[in-house]
Length: 305
Image (tube, rainbow, N blue to C red):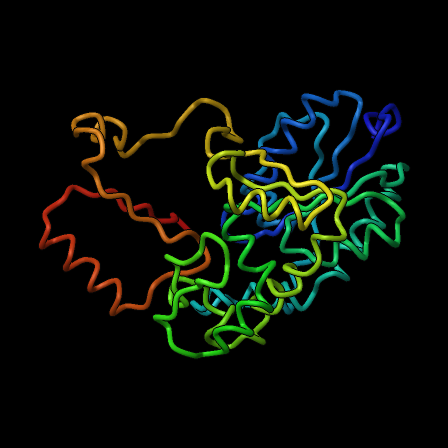
Protein backbone atom coordinates (compact mmCIF):
# COMPACT_ATOMS: atom_id res chain seq x y z
CA UNK A 1 0.00 0.00 0.00
CA UNK A 2 2.88 2.35 -0.83
CA UNK A 3 0.55 4.75 -2.63
CA UNK A 4 -1.38 5.30 0.58
CA UNK A 5 1.74 5.89 2.67
CA UNK A 6 2.85 8.66 0.33
CA UNK A 7 -0.60 10.21 -0.15
CA UNK A 8 -1.43 13.59 1.35
CA UNK A 9 -5.15 12.74 1.58
CA UNK A 10 -7.26 9.57 1.71
CA UNK A 11 -10.82 9.78 0.37
CA UNK A 12 -13.36 6.99 0.85
CA UNK A 13 -16.00 6.58 -1.87
CA UNK A 14 -19.21 4.63 -1.20
CA UNK A 15 -20.99 3.44 -4.35
CA UNK A 16 -24.53 2.18 -4.89
CA UNK A 17 -23.88 -1.12 -6.70
CA UNK A 18 -27.07 -1.36 -8.77
CA UNK A 19 -28.23 0.16 -12.04
CA UNK A 20 -25.84 2.67 -13.53
CA UNK A 21 -24.82 4.35 -10.28
CA UNK A 22 -21.28 3.05 -9.73
CA UNK A 23 -19.97 3.93 -13.20
CA UNK A 24 -20.71 7.69 -13.16
CA UNK A 25 -19.41 7.90 -9.60
CA UNK A 26 -16.18 6.23 -10.68
CA UNK A 27 -15.97 8.60 -13.66
CA UNK A 28 -16.12 11.56 -11.30
CA UNK A 29 -13.52 10.03 -9.00
CA UNK A 30 -11.18 9.48 -11.95
CA UNK A 31 -11.44 13.16 -12.83
CA UNK A 32 -10.79 14.14 -9.22
CA UNK A 33 -7.82 11.78 -9.12
CA UNK A 34 -6.31 13.46 -12.16
CA UNK A 35 -6.79 16.85 -10.50
CA UNK A 36 -5.40 15.67 -7.13
CA UNK A 37 -2.35 13.51 -7.95
CA UNK A 38 -1.26 13.18 -4.31
CA UNK A 39 -4.63 11.84 -3.09
CA UNK A 40 -5.61 8.17 -2.77
CA UNK A 41 -9.21 7.06 -3.28
CA UNK A 42 -10.70 3.89 -1.78
CA UNK A 43 -13.77 2.87 -3.78
CA UNK A 44 -16.19 0.72 -1.79
CA UNK A 45 -18.86 -1.36 -3.50
CA UNK A 46 -19.94 -5.00 -3.78
CA UNK A 47 -17.60 -7.50 -5.38
CA UNK A 48 -19.92 -8.00 -8.35
CA UNK A 49 -20.14 -4.27 -8.97
CA UNK A 50 -16.41 -3.72 -8.62
CA UNK A 51 -15.63 -6.62 -10.96
CA UNK A 52 -17.86 -5.17 -13.68
CA UNK A 53 -16.92 -1.52 -13.12
CA UNK A 54 -13.19 -1.30 -12.52
CA UNK A 55 -10.54 -1.21 -15.24
CA UNK A 56 -7.13 -2.55 -14.27
CA UNK A 57 -5.02 0.57 -14.72
CA UNK A 58 -6.10 2.86 -11.88
CA UNK A 59 -3.09 3.53 -9.67
CA UNK A 60 -4.62 6.00 -7.22
CA UNK A 61 -8.13 4.49 -7.00
CA UNK A 62 -8.37 1.13 -5.26
CA UNK A 63 -11.52 -1.02 -5.08
CA UNK A 64 -12.60 -2.58 -1.80
CA UNK A 65 -15.50 -5.01 -1.50
CA UNK A 66 -18.42 -4.65 0.89
CA UNK A 67 -20.86 -7.39 1.84
CA UNK A 68 -23.82 -7.55 -0.54
CA UNK A 69 -26.19 -8.76 2.19
CA UNK A 70 -27.12 -11.95 0.34
CA UNK A 71 -27.66 -15.08 2.47
CA UNK A 72 -25.19 -17.93 2.14
CA UNK A 73 -26.18 -20.11 -0.81
CA UNK A 74 -28.49 -17.45 -2.26
CA UNK A 75 -29.72 -18.17 -5.79
CA UNK A 76 -31.25 -15.41 -7.91
CA UNK A 77 -34.90 -16.22 -8.62
CA UNK A 78 -35.68 -13.61 -11.24
CA UNK A 79 -36.87 -10.79 -8.98
CA UNK A 80 -34.49 -7.83 -9.57
CA UNK A 81 -35.69 -6.09 -6.40
CA UNK A 82 -34.61 -8.94 -4.12
CA UNK A 83 -30.81 -8.38 -4.21
CA UNK A 84 -31.42 -4.65 -3.73
CA UNK A 85 -33.59 -5.28 -0.67
CA UNK A 86 -31.01 -7.62 0.85
CA UNK A 87 -28.28 -5.06 0.26
CA UNK A 88 -30.29 -2.23 1.83
CA UNK A 89 -30.79 -4.35 4.95
CA UNK A 90 -27.00 -4.67 5.23
CA UNK A 91 -26.26 -0.93 5.07
CA UNK A 92 -24.73 1.02 6.68
CA UNK A 93 -23.11 -1.71 8.79
CA UNK A 94 -21.39 -3.35 5.83
CA UNK A 95 -19.82 -0.04 4.82
CA UNK A 96 -18.67 0.75 8.35
CA UNK A 97 -16.95 -2.63 8.58
CA UNK A 98 -15.36 -2.13 5.16
CA UNK A 99 -14.09 1.32 6.15
CA UNK A 100 -12.42 -0.22 9.21
CA UNK A 101 -10.76 -2.79 6.94
CA UNK A 102 -9.61 -0.08 4.52
CA UNK A 103 -8.02 1.97 7.30
CA UNK A 104 -6.35 -1.13 8.79
CA UNK A 105 -4.98 -2.40 5.47
CA UNK A 106 -3.81 0.97 4.16
CA UNK A 107 -2.61 2.40 7.46
CA UNK A 108 -4.19 5.67 6.39
CA UNK A 109 -7.21 7.26 8.14
CA UNK A 110 -10.07 8.63 6.06
CA UNK A 111 -9.89 12.39 5.46
CA UNK A 112 -12.96 12.86 3.27
CA UNK A 113 -16.11 10.97 2.28
CA UNK A 114 -17.87 10.92 -1.10
CA UNK A 115 -21.01 8.82 -1.52
CA UNK A 116 -23.87 8.20 -3.85
CA UNK A 117 -26.61 10.60 -2.73
CA UNK A 118 -28.82 7.57 -2.03
CA UNK A 119 -26.80 7.06 1.14
CA UNK A 120 -28.28 9.40 3.73
CA UNK A 121 -26.18 7.56 6.32
CA UNK A 122 -23.14 9.20 4.75
CA UNK A 123 -23.90 12.17 7.01
CA UNK A 124 -23.70 9.97 10.12
CA UNK A 125 -20.48 8.27 9.01
CA UNK A 126 -18.89 11.64 8.27
CA UNK A 127 -19.97 12.97 11.67
CA UNK A 128 -18.53 9.91 13.42
CA UNK A 129 -15.22 10.27 11.59
CA UNK A 130 -15.31 14.08 11.88
CA UNK A 131 -14.71 14.55 8.16
CA UNK A 132 -16.51 16.41 5.32
CA UNK A 133 -19.11 14.58 3.23
CA UNK A 134 -20.02 15.16 -0.43
CA UNK A 135 -23.08 13.47 -1.95
CA UNK A 136 -23.34 12.76 -5.68
CA UNK A 137 -26.79 12.61 -7.30
CA UNK A 138 -26.32 10.75 -10.59
CA UNK A 139 -29.54 11.97 -12.24
CA UNK A 140 -30.91 15.45 -13.02
CA UNK A 141 -31.52 18.30 -10.53
CA UNK A 142 -35.29 18.12 -11.10
CA UNK A 143 -35.33 14.44 -10.12
CA UNK A 144 -33.42 15.33 -6.96
CA UNK A 145 -35.75 18.21 -6.11
CA UNK A 146 -38.88 16.04 -5.91
CA UNK A 147 -37.18 13.91 -3.26
CA UNK A 148 -35.94 16.95 -1.35
CA UNK A 149 -39.50 18.33 -1.33
CA UNK A 150 -41.24 14.96 -0.88
CA UNK A 151 -42.99 16.06 2.33
CA UNK A 152 -44.49 19.10 0.61
CA UNK A 153 -45.58 17.03 -2.39
CA UNK A 154 -47.21 14.41 -0.16
CA UNK A 155 -48.97 17.17 1.81
CA UNK A 156 -50.62 18.57 -1.32
CA UNK A 157 -51.39 15.40 -3.29
CA UNK A 158 -51.62 12.72 -0.60
CA UNK A 159 -50.66 9.07 -0.98
CA UNK A 160 -52.17 7.01 -3.81
CA UNK A 161 -54.41 9.94 -4.75
CA UNK A 162 -55.51 11.22 -8.20
CA UNK A 163 -52.70 10.76 -10.71
CA UNK A 164 -53.70 13.58 -13.05
CA UNK A 165 -53.18 16.34 -10.45
CA UNK A 166 -50.48 18.83 -11.54
CA UNK A 167 -47.71 19.95 -9.19
CA UNK A 168 -48.65 23.62 -9.59
CA UNK A 169 -47.66 24.36 -5.98
CA UNK A 170 -43.96 23.99 -6.88
CA UNK A 171 -42.25 26.65 -9.04
CA UNK A 172 -41.81 25.47 -12.65
CA UNK A 173 -43.54 22.13 -11.95
CA UNK A 174 -47.05 22.93 -13.22
CA UNK A 175 -46.58 20.77 -16.33
CA UNK A 176 -45.70 17.71 -14.22
CA UNK A 177 -48.46 15.49 -12.85
CA UNK A 178 -48.54 13.08 -9.95
CA UNK A 179 -48.40 10.24 -12.49
CA UNK A 180 -44.99 11.52 -13.61
CA UNK A 181 -43.46 11.09 -10.15
CA UNK A 182 -41.35 8.01 -9.37
CA UNK A 183 -43.18 5.11 -7.76
CA UNK A 184 -42.86 5.17 -3.99
CA UNK A 185 -42.95 8.95 -3.68
CA UNK A 186 -46.74 9.40 -3.60
CA UNK A 187 -47.91 6.03 -4.90
CA UNK A 188 -47.28 2.37 -4.23
CA UNK A 189 -45.64 1.13 -1.05
CA UNK A 190 -43.89 4.22 0.29
CA UNK A 191 -42.42 2.21 3.17
CA UNK A 192 -40.69 -0.35 0.93
CA UNK A 193 -36.87 -0.41 1.27
CA UNK A 194 -36.07 1.65 -1.83
CA UNK A 195 -38.70 4.41 -1.33
CA UNK A 196 -37.70 4.60 2.34
CA UNK A 197 -34.05 5.01 1.32
CA UNK A 198 -34.96 7.81 -1.11
CA UNK A 199 -37.09 9.57 1.49
CA UNK A 200 -34.20 9.61 3.96
CA UNK A 201 -31.94 10.77 1.16
CA UNK A 202 -34.23 13.72 0.46
CA UNK A 203 -33.87 15.14 3.96
CA UNK A 204 -30.15 14.46 4.49
CA UNK A 205 -28.16 16.35 1.78
CA UNK A 206 -28.50 19.58 3.75
CA UNK A 207 -25.91 18.06 6.12
CA UNK A 208 -23.41 17.58 3.28
CA UNK A 209 -20.49 19.92 2.66
CA UNK A 210 -21.59 19.83 -0.98
CA UNK A 211 -24.11 18.11 -3.24
CA UNK A 212 -23.09 17.40 -6.83
CA UNK A 213 -25.41 16.42 -9.66
CA UNK A 214 -25.19 15.02 -13.17
CA UNK A 215 -26.10 18.20 -15.00
CA UNK A 216 -24.86 21.62 -16.02
CA UNK A 217 -25.83 25.06 -14.77
CA UNK A 218 -28.24 26.31 -17.43
CA UNK A 219 -30.05 23.09 -18.29
CA UNK A 220 -32.72 23.51 -15.60
CA UNK A 221 -31.94 26.92 -14.16
CA UNK A 222 -35.03 27.43 -12.00
CA UNK A 223 -34.63 24.13 -10.18
CA UNK A 224 -30.87 24.56 -9.87
CA UNK A 225 -31.36 27.94 -8.20
CA UNK A 226 -33.91 26.46 -5.78
CA UNK A 227 -31.49 23.68 -4.84
CA UNK A 228 -28.73 26.23 -4.26
CA UNK A 229 -30.95 27.71 -1.57
CA UNK A 230 -31.34 24.30 0.10
CA UNK A 231 -27.68 23.24 0.24
CA UNK A 232 -24.54 24.96 1.44
CA UNK A 233 -22.87 24.14 -1.89
CA UNK A 234 -24.63 22.75 -4.97
CA UNK A 235 -22.46 21.72 -7.93
CA UNK A 236 -23.28 20.75 -11.51
CA UNK A 237 -20.56 18.32 -12.57
CA UNK A 238 -22.13 16.50 -15.54
CA UNK A 239 -22.98 15.26 -17.99
CA UNK A 240 -21.27 11.99 -17.08
CA UNK A 241 -22.26 10.21 -20.29
CA UNK A 242 -19.49 12.06 -22.11
CA UNK A 243 -16.82 10.28 -20.07
CA UNK A 244 -16.04 6.59 -20.43
CA UNK A 245 -14.63 4.49 -17.60
CA UNK A 246 -13.09 1.92 -19.90
CA UNK A 247 -10.51 2.44 -22.57
CA UNK A 248 -11.32 3.83 -25.99
CA UNK A 249 -11.34 0.32 -27.45
CA UNK A 250 -14.94 -0.68 -28.14
CA UNK A 251 -16.07 -4.28 -28.44
CA UNK A 252 -18.52 -4.20 -31.34
CA UNK A 253 -18.62 -7.87 -32.25
CA UNK A 254 -22.28 -7.56 -33.29
CA UNK A 255 -21.58 -4.82 -35.86
CA UNK A 256 -23.80 -2.30 -34.09
CA UNK A 257 -21.79 0.78 -35.08
CA UNK A 258 -21.70 -0.27 -38.72
CA UNK A 259 -25.47 -0.83 -38.67
CA UNK A 260 -26.05 2.55 -37.01
CA UNK A 261 -23.93 4.37 -39.59
CA UNK A 262 -26.35 3.26 -42.31
CA UNK A 263 -29.25 5.20 -40.75
CA UNK A 264 -30.02 8.89 -40.66
CA UNK A 265 -29.58 10.89 -37.46
CA UNK A 266 -32.51 10.62 -35.01
CA UNK A 267 -34.09 7.81 -37.02
CA UNK A 268 -33.40 4.82 -34.74
CA UNK A 269 -35.36 3.94 -31.59
CA UNK A 270 -33.10 3.06 -28.65
CA UNK A 271 -34.53 0.80 -25.92
CA UNK A 272 -32.92 0.01 -22.59
CA UNK A 273 -34.38 -0.67 -19.15
CA UNK A 274 -31.16 -0.69 -17.15
CA UNK A 275 -30.12 -3.58 -14.95
CA UNK A 276 -32.57 -3.41 -12.05
CA UNK A 277 -36.06 -2.73 -13.37
CA UNK A 278 -37.64 -4.58 -16.30
CA UNK A 279 -41.25 -4.02 -17.43
CA UNK A 280 -43.69 -6.89 -16.89
CA UNK A 281 -44.34 -9.28 -19.81
CA UNK A 282 -47.57 -7.60 -20.95
CA UNK A 283 -45.81 -4.23 -21.25
CA UNK A 284 -42.91 -5.79 -23.17
CA UNK A 285 -45.46 -7.42 -25.48
CA UNK A 286 -47.16 -4.05 -26.06
CA UNK A 287 -43.80 -2.45 -26.82
CA UNK A 288 -42.96 -5.16 -29.35
CA UNK A 289 -46.33 -4.70 -31.03
CA UNK A 290 -45.73 -0.95 -31.25
CA UNK A 291 -42.30 -1.47 -32.80
CA UNK A 292 -43.77 -3.87 -35.32
CA UNK A 293 -46.59 -1.47 -36.16
CA UNK A 294 -44.48 1.67 -36.59
CA UNK A 295 -41.70 -0.17 -38.47
CA UNK A 296 -39.00 2.09 -37.06
CA UNK A 297 -35.49 0.60 -36.93
CA UNK A 298 -34.57 0.00 -33.31
CA UNK A 299 -31.64 -0.93 -31.11
CA UNK A 300 -32.52 -2.88 -27.97
CA UNK A 301 -29.79 -3.05 -25.33
CA UNK A 302 -29.84 -6.31 -23.33
CA UNK A 303 -27.48 -7.39 -20.57
CA UNK A 304 -25.54 -10.49 -21.53
CA UNK A 305 -25.85 -11.85 -18.01
